[in-house]
Amino acid sequence: MNVKKLKFGSLTLLFLVGLASCKKDKPFTELEPVEGTIVAEVGAELKNQIYFDLSEGTTFTVPVNAWDIAFESEGGFVVKVNSAKKSGVWNTGQTDFNAVTVASTTPGAFKFDNADDEKGGTAIGKWGTAGLSDKKVYVINLGLNPPASTTLIGYKKFIIEGFANDAYTLRYANLDGSDEKTVQIPVNKKKNYTYYSFQTNGIVNIEPDKGKWDILISGYTRPGGGPPPYSFVISVGVLVNTYSGVRVAVDNPAKELEKTDSPTGAINTFPSSNSRYEQITVSNYTALQPSDKQLVIGSDWYQILQPHRNGNYKIYDWKTYVVKDTDGRYFKMRFLAYKGGPNVTVGYPTFEYKEIK
Picture 1: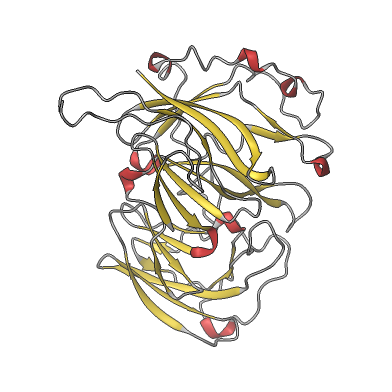
Picture 2: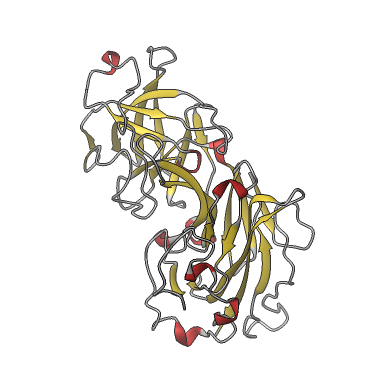
């Protein structure tokens, strides 16, 4: 995990236009606009998650496999799992911890977090009432390592025993009952979530403080094609810090066109010249009806075209996102590429952004 100031030559991000900040010798000088072009190194194997603070020009990069489960720190009792590595959860319906010894092989038994419904669409769901646990036994598939592979990490069974005195109690073990532990996980109220690793048996520092990030570029699990359990895939996209008030409006001049992966489809031949990126100002924000959905940007800025094996990604660079960040400042952004890096592979989203007033 590392924090970086966006700058030219960064190994993780290339910031191609300099950032401006408040002049310290003139404390009442208005902040100069921030703008730049960034290449986010999620990587071909989708190994990284990258948090961005647009106003400050900083990033926080985290290895995807650093965490397994996360607990809402304040305001609720949401518990989520690591969607970036296709981690899923099976609610066994049982309360006898020792009776659960194998993972279900029933198609669809393992559920995945719905990134479009951060609080109401978790795989674990409602595990109790106001911190009092139903004592249900869950089995977690710890996902894939690396996420772009088919290498399974393994399974754990667990019970969320409850929440009291600002701490969750978690009981977990291997499926055969070995290596059982019961731990107290005190929440960090400076963060949206408090993260835990079943693999290292400890709390891990993942996301920046609540008001210190605006968007996250990461893999996430979403519905795909085919019957269960192959009906879910990992896509790279953008998740928004809606907990801290970040809102995003979308200017989509092709919104009436049908989504398709056909190279000849109207949406995939729609000219870049139709973009309104240069004309958009902060006055457009309200009229574009900003959303409080975590997945308002998601992966809707690209489409892999048929035949998929050719890896031809169409970037919808005519789509503009208007972001109100945690500091109440406004930015417009658009994506320019999905491939990049030394070998020009997938997993290198490129976007430009500019502060607007």
